[in-house]
Length: 114
Image (cartoon, rainbow, N blue to C red; front, side, top):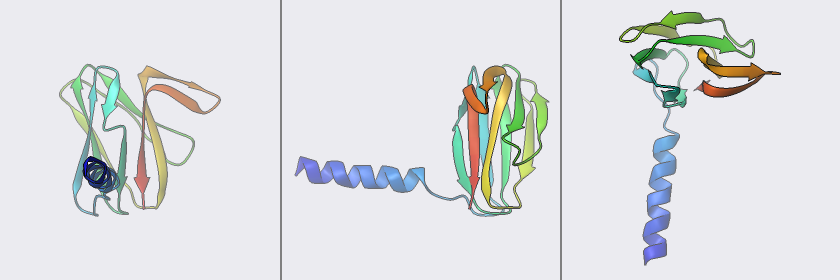
């Protein structure tokens, strides 16, 4: 019985984790300390993502050549981007991450548009 409940809970968590945000809906990624929350989001083509600096200043900097964005956001401010094509769009905070040979460590994230 406990195993069955555990499997049901795990299935619910997986569905929630991979729910795609529809076009036109708002998705907010919060920068707090040295992390993005959530660090990965799934959205539909045409959806807008907003990054908000909850604590400290951050950058939203694209990497891996899929898109172009390099914006600094001070605490309490935000920046947005509307994704018009399918793909995986990686971003990082230049203040709180490092990029070595295309691999990001630290305050890194991604937007999956499908």
